[in-house]
Length: 236
Length: 120
Image 1: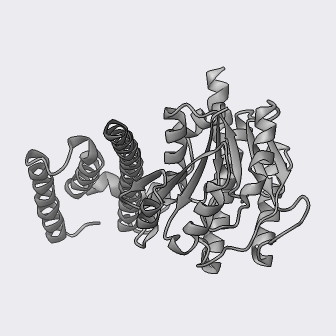
Image 2: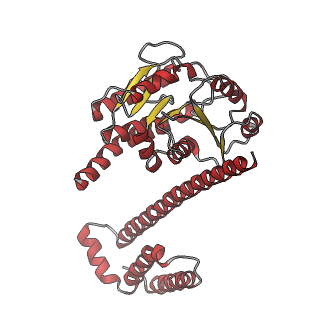
Image 3: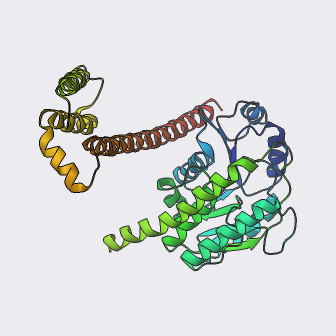
């Protein structure tokens, strides 16, 4: 099985070396860093270590960068694509665990959840409230329990990679992509992972963006369900 | 009812706008398909300026206190749809731009990989 790790990076020069060193020790996985138009040394550092790199000349946002990675995975015939944050939050030791359900044909998409075993960094209280709300919304609409819909530590099967090449949300894509897959009948599984606090810098979502984030993501989850249902009815 | 002087003034203003719009299309600053709503809006207002009486009766029938309020409301709706159309165009342009950029970087990556393989 060909396995690719996709690491979207925007101004992560303080964290990228750490993740590069950790991933270099991991055998059996290829990895690619998608530099999303960073204005710092991210690209230079990747070149210094001779890392597989795609340099986006403009900032496309997290969704656009990750989708570029999925397109690369599809073009190069990878069987599994794992998404990993560049800020050191995700422990590469869980890579084998996260792809296991895909290898065994149990799932099309696997999410690493920090809220199953509740170990490691649990995020801020405000974010946890948001996560519970989104989790509830997904459960009501799609009848599926997703404990950590905002987790960026995910693995996608070949079928899911192909689908993401055509349709992947652009900003704040994590919960929306789950809604999209659930609506299309993809099998999603969560496995417990341990997450760390980011090494340096601030998260891409600040306190003041929380309201916008919640409104946008909730609306996206709701609209996706109604919209796609109508289309699929028409298709059948 | 509209004052005659105001009628003349509005007619000249709207006709001027209409010719400006035609000139923009002719000079290819604008695509005709993007200006249909603008033409519709200006034509409706010109019509209302030349023949205000039916609009007066219509506004009374619809319960407007003053005919001008109906004009304002219609204008707001037309502007709303024009802005909505523009938002659609911007979304589409951004989407196309993203797809093009992704294709470009992927091709560039493939080219650079092939080149380094050939050198080695």
